Amino acid sequence: MSPFEHGEVFVLDDGGEVDLDLGNYERFLDIKLTRDNNITTGKIYQSVIDKERRGDYLGKTVQVVPHITDAIQEWIERVAKIPVDGQEGPADVCVIELGGTIGDIESMPFIEALGQFSYRVGSGNFCLIHVSLVPVLNVVGEQKTKPTQHSVRGLRGLGLTPNILACRSTKALDENVKRKLAQFCHIPEENIVTLYDVPNIWHVPLLLKDQKAHEAILKGLNLLGVARKPELKEWTARTKIFDTLHDPVRIAMVGKYTGLSDSYLSVLKALLHASVACHRKLIVEWIAASDLEDSTAKEAPDVYKAAWDLLKGVDGVLVPGGFGDRGVQGKILAAKYAREKKVPFLGICLGMQIAVIEFARSVLGLHDANSTEFDPETTNPCVIFMPEGSKTHMGGTMRLGSRRTYFNVTDCISAKLYGNVSFVDERHRHRYEVNPNMISKLENVGLSFVGRDETGQRMEIVELPSHPYFVGVQFHPEFKSRPGKPSALFLGLIAAACGRLETVLHDNGHVRKPLTSAMSNGHSMMEIHQNGGAIKSSNGSVNGVYSNDMHSILPQFKTWSTTRASCIANARAHFVCKMGRFPSIIWKHSQYIVPCFLF
Image (cartoon, rainbow, N blue to C red; front, side, top):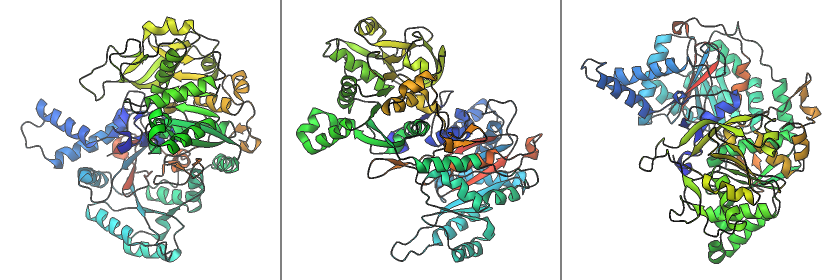
């Protein structure tokens, strides 16, 4: 999946390569999803074709209705039973996010399937929230309701009637606009929620609570009698913390896909989690790796100078993963600068491989050292293609998912940041690895490979002991970073960048003094929830401006108490939605919230 088209490719524990939305759900709910939580048209059609080939349909004509629509419903019900929070038993609530736009031909089978599903489970067991844009004409400031009216009409024409209308706009809906929408969309006025721009994403749950959105949902699901009052004291405290951060920490993101920040969404979130834990305001300086190269100095000297000026003004450098040779030389130069100038450095996946190549060139004197990905004929291959990989089939053939890394050097920065454990489980996505035949040469001149796989032949973590913080990892620690539980290595980068690394290391990867303003009932309120869609302001800072999604509202629904359903027949509809143009449907099934995604 191209980062420019899809944004970040999120990797799950089981190796599933999925849409970045699943990353938002994992972060906000602190759960572990599976590849089956991501439903695609291809998966559904493939499953139906496989059934037909096995003879399950006994030679009948296979059609979209009922065979495709039945397969969609069966998939949802099957996945809803899979525990995702580490506890036994199926979930009470299944969240179904249906992406796209009303009228998309790709979504028609899913709409029909959900229409059938809602009819089958009955009223009160199925809640649909339609999210629609209410644009504001800048010239006169008028809020236009026609797009929402037409989208609701189109949705009803397809057999789905929304219970709640969530209106996305730049400002709060005027009362007369709400009345107009209620009249033309046949939705009670109290069930029309306005979702307007706020200073940071963490204000959104408070915004929804103030409008009693949770009560509208509970009422539609006949759950008012069993639900507790939302407990948002901690959430409110977190929101205030973010609003008061002012001491900056500047991190250079040296990558290939800097034109689309969603390409590095989980990296941004992990940086934010760590920055908040260190009580620093995150400022990300985006640097296109190719802008640091000598060729740019000749072709666009102003761009070259601006890129280097940014790099020289940061507190830390991060080189994320990527594929292909474009910008590789620029990443090598960034790693060299960080190593020589003692600037905190974190290399992820390709970033680790880049650090090894740069060290081999600069310290070992192997000027043609390279990866066989970029130069198959190099005489000093520091990075090689993994033996078990496939060079003919690209899809799903990488080393994917959660793998175990063992610390063979216990007195190292990484082990201390992880709490002095003997191993860690992190998620991977790569085809190339550091050449094990080069390890002894590299370690003899100062590089230390402190983490390896179970065989001891695959390098997972590299450090430079003579450097304040120079760490490279083959895995992707950003995928498991959570609000309030920042990734250990990102915490190390931020702590080193703001001069607090020794304190964090002394406390085994924890920030010693939590903010007093972040305390409630004696517990640290550092669990800051940040959503996707962070945008970069003119000064390079990452702002939590509310974007086109609603993952941030999830935490308040986690506090609801629901009765346990004994079987699918007793399933009740529940909720959570995606900010965009399509409905979100909630189906209450068992005990915990389980997202199922339709694309």
